[in-house]
Image 1 (cartoon, rainbow, N blue to C red):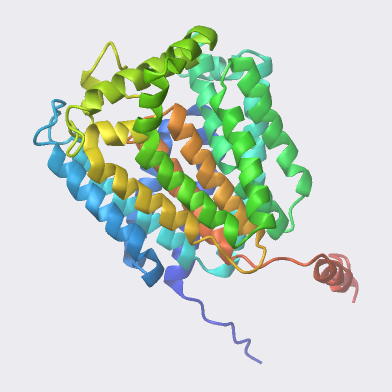
Image 2: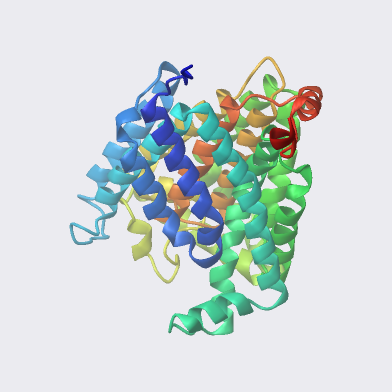
Length: 414
């Protein structure tokens, strides 16, 4: 008798394998080197280029993204920031857009069995990273320093703590998705506890506010989308679009009314410095509000602005002007509005929570074009795409399967 095994789409299995490999590396990268997310997600996306497709629902995001990409590349003509060809931010931005989107398409195409394995690895991998960050917080990054010393690259304690703290943003962005992945793959639901312990403990020990702020916002957003699955995503879409369009106006009002100066005097130094960057940014973007100063131009406005304004909306206005702000508004509004659904779905709630965590962190911390941060967005989007396609495992079915499943000994005794 010949057993007939069902044929599987090899390309789907390949896509699932690439997703699985990236998620296997995720906790290691989050601990020892978040900058590694850029090459890992980029390579995974390059390996999955054959599945890159633009669906009907993708068109608003795709068109707005292409518009922003063309404008960003073109703006290098008048940008005061210049780089060699191979290090050109415009060239890297084009490659990132293609490869990271291909990786998201791969997560959609992943074969169901491989997808479930990848999500199970994700559900366990993020808590492992959380435990590693918690241990580093307790020991003042001793483990990381020891590793660097073994590699012949000893590091000062303060720099080691700064490097390890980057993993906090990985936890803050991915924890809602990992929590639902644990539920949908039958993993232990308590796995969220070590993730949050690392996030909260590490933020307190290393003195980082943004991950805690993102955690709070993600929790509120996730609950709102779960309770109001149709209305909440649309409201979030409007609020996010308003953030990208009206942030300069908000800072200008605070500045002209004197509230900004008052806040700078009473807030901690890190927040006071951020407000100073924002104040300088609206002063400079006023010179070229329509076309902006050009891609990465904010790097050239030191000492008033160090590297970037530490606010994604202000950076887009400053560098790409009105066109960049409109494109970002359309992209984020489209992504969030698409999560609207007649029925409650924990995966969509987690996707919205993760998306808003990214907006919050980008609004107070990182530059828009930082490669590892964009790659992490691609990884989060891929996890969300896979999670939305992962069927819900009902508890009664799981128990029934457990009863019917024979033991390992039974295979030999019967």
